[in-house]
Length: 115
Image 1 (cartoon, helix red, strand yellow):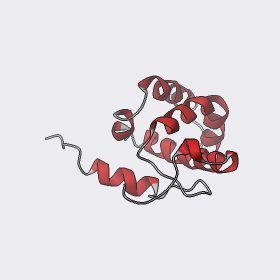
Image 2: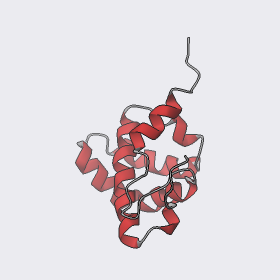
Image 3: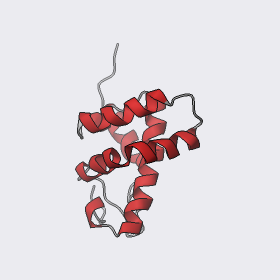
Image 4: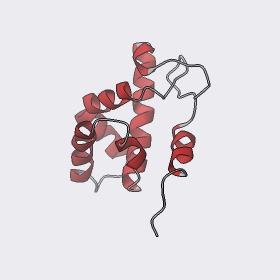
């Protein structure tokens, strides 16, 4: 990314919280689409496994309830992932410089397709 911004670890506590909640919302959308390949290539599979286990156990919940439950039970694992995403930059308020959907969409297009 050529845009300027801050790494997750450089954000204020309030901005980190905003970034975290935004990421959890995005992560769960990708989980439900079975589309976490890009992320799994970049971060600890242990943290993702912990998160995914909670999501699987609570998959009956609607999106907002699952976001809240996942935040409550897996916050530390999400933080671990966000600290490993060195190529993701944020504005001072915690919003990603490049929207999650846009950033991952570009990378998904580069994945080899299955025949």
